[in-house]
Length: 252
Image (spheres, rainbow, N blue to C red):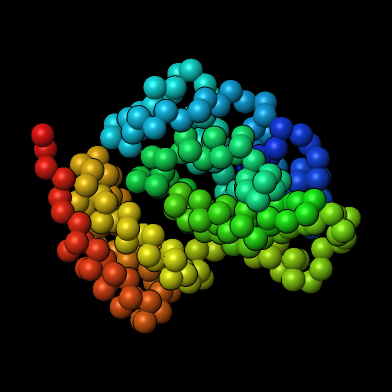
């Protein structure tokens, strides 16, 4: 079954090389299935305030800017999607400042993930270097949101106009046909899940309530039916070790 509602985060103020690569991906999909909709969020067109680092969103699930800018609107669109394309050009070996500002504002999702097992396709372009560092960071963000990074499409200056090769087509097909029931989470995903689980268990009350409500507190991953035995053992041992080390936060 195809994903029907794809939300695209364009992390550039311009509609340049990265945007054009996404349009090329859209054309590839639409040539095979006309029912897919692409909804673009060009971050440069939104009001996104810089995170204050006040931790109010972590402790209360609210932000001082909730009614003053567009971040909640963007987060709701991501929540309502079937899949996400997360993109950024490389700026000084990393994502754009615009995208990083938005990501900082999603901090509550590390503690109380909302994009559970949504597939995320990473897209990035560069004039020279930094692709590996940038795409790796975006993959880690996807995992901390509770989503699944299913692959990367990237370009450098010398191959901007290249057609998709067989490997890239496989990535694109895996994204649009993603089914969590067939997914085997990585060791990194299992590790981050255990870190978030320990924080919920020992540190922040609102996290614990959220995780208990979702019935994740005794799991090793959001969906664990396809997790191999060796990974299950690893996840259980890692949780036990970390949970024993972290002391509960005492109420003042």
